[in-house]
Length: 398
Image (tube, rainbow, N blue to C red):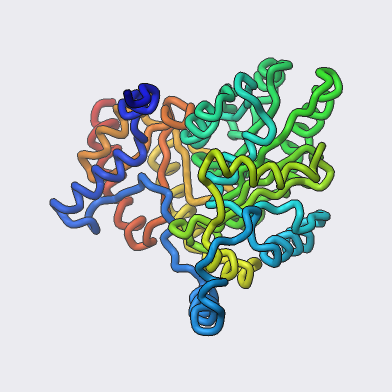
């Protein structure tokens, strides 16, 4: 007999993926260039040329067995050392290669991190709005995800409710900054207050509470934004990173867990990740990709287009009457819908070939997400569709 819980999951497919599939099908009818597809967060800028050059050089100059063989379970030692050195230079940390575990993207990093610090039945708190895949990441590990409602005023942490939900059962807190879907970056004050609360509760409850920081958008931060490095504020912290967004490499599945050297049992956690891999299958990311990334650690793709697109959309949406907290990073914006039912709002938008994601899937009903990782020219063309949508569906009825 097949496993029922996975069969049941077929009834709850990703809303984002379904909308992306709809956009593709609609594009086949009218030309994809005429579909304003804001559904999927897939990077729209090319990877740096140097990464391509490094790949070519590796293929031409290195032993094929080194490039295409299995790496060590923890990752290639020289790569781990380079990652640690880069983090230390950028953020004033004290990592060594022994604190770095190479993973298949941020998803693989989170899968390992949660299993390192929780057991079945333990609770993990996260904050709405949140990436919906946290539900299967956590619940299928046996831990229990609890969601703190959104602070819709600025999408910083809702501390009042957080402290009520931070019971003795909570063994970890999972944050995502810069945030998908809101585009908000948690400020230094927010991170410092979070760290202070967790430190106090650790003492009160007599057990560790780990802070897992999901950081795939760390490099996509806009001008003037306060963007602290989370692990610099709290000892029991695990940083989960991916090069999918910074280097535009989502298909290569490469990232890492960085264990704070001050973390309880830090000397064991990285090695534990290798044991966890035996059960998750998230092991040994491709050797050639590890080696190539190690040569471009401090580079990014040209990410400036995302801020350009954000400014265009923010100006237009607010002029049309949308309430919206201005993003500080990522390639997402999260306005309030013009009616209470965001799903109905997004369904109406399809008539104008605007593909938007309702906020219900992110734990924030009444809002919707736009992933503006598309060509600026297409963003600009979509503005008239937004005007027509709002004028026809809402203003004509006032």
